[in-house]
Image (cartoon, rainbow, N blue to C red; front, top):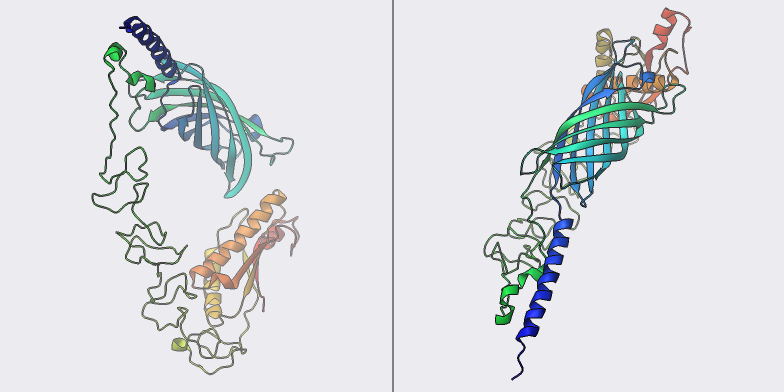
Length: 447
């Protein structure tokens, strides 16, 4: 009989060499794929053009390795820089997307380079400016324990494309970061080539590898194809191991109390359409979603209004008034006109003076009696400061008055704001008295 033993041994040796090569290759390419967080303390050295002092800040990132050499990371940054020439602060809030190139991930001490881009929001005296930003730098990681926690530090140069300072198209700040990189989740085992399942030493005995199929939640779907690994025992599942959701509202049928809700309807945890004002009409069909509890409503969720004057019958003292006739909150005809109002402000301030709040409260009561009146609120400034700053300041002043009226119960839909900055003075901006008169808010009846 032909003796095949020598050939079998040669084949076994060749397979062993191939398996060893595959395992070595896999080991060389393996790396920790876990997500991590990266909190850090920052020290900011601002651009000389900012005229601001050095300051500490905070940085918090979340990231994940995508290869043996690269990490991708999204970070939020915050610092507050004090002006050298005033008591004001420049609060900076940013979001940066970075790529980290790791020189040698296998070593305990690993240098890296970093480059990224994002946006910075600068807030000075409640005026915010958005500007794009890029950063680049170098740093190192030092592994502290076997779990994978690492000490991290880097030096970065951040270019903030803020052109609000004349003569500067961008501002460059130096930033030193010191913090930790903390992975979470179970560390995966090193990759092993599939060929290693064949025991080389027992090939002559034709050992057959055994493949174990795992079904963690006992739903009949192997874990390798199960998209929902935590279904309860006995649940009816589809081919992906997930419970059925017939109406597609993201609430499975076993927990859905309203299993036939229409597509794209917002539902609660029980799978039923939300009814915010509890009037029995779901929000997706409710045209008046803010009716008071216990109110009598029609099929559209609105209180009846027989004369179509905008006043529900339950509160209408004149239920037979013509719909084209101007009516007050009681549903009766209007004969008052809101007079023009003016409210002044301190320099660079958006705070409403206490002496003016009483006048605004009286105006609010008049507006409540005339709910069909619409008011235009126009903000003004003096000519001190940059034009862009004055435009934003005047809009904020108008918004402060608008918000005060809203707090007094006036509907936001009746109030319209506009800021025109220093463009319409009513007095001489060369004197303190004149500038004080120009820092104002005026109100006019639109209809």
